[in-house]
Image (cartoon, rainbow, N blue to C red; front, side):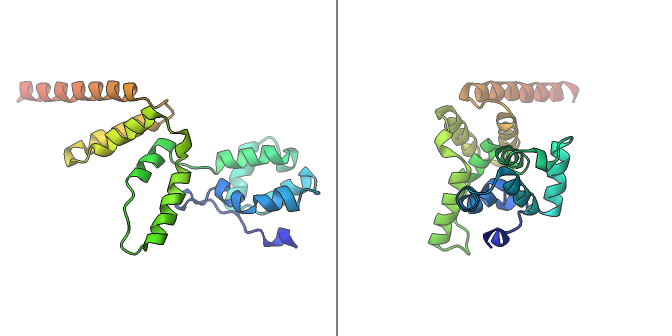
Length: 189
């Protein structure tokens, strides 16, 4: 039976093992092969395919409801939310721009990794402003700029709309703080 061949889902965002990636492999089975099954049957199957830790986290997340109380699409949305990308999209895009060929990779392996990372980066939804910010931050390569680079990445990507204007304001604030610390340091010594 096809349902038995569906592998268990184990969440590991560092290696790209998200619910979305797992379901992409089995979506055709759920949507086509199991189309004659009702939502309750698909929900039960999906829950059985969660690893122990994943099931516990999912069950805790939907309390006071039980998995059987959800429709299939509701369960899919919850699982995607809980077991989606843990990294922020802006950071994922930045990491994509930093990619270099590894010594152990051949060109085909590199092409596959580039393809996977570009898809993960959702480049079609990248705005001009976001791209400008990524290029600017990527250009900060000096060792002295490491803190600035890290700070911009975390503040731009953390739940805020990324804009070039916002980045410039953050830079002005950071520069003013650095200059203030330097002048305070000179006064006290």
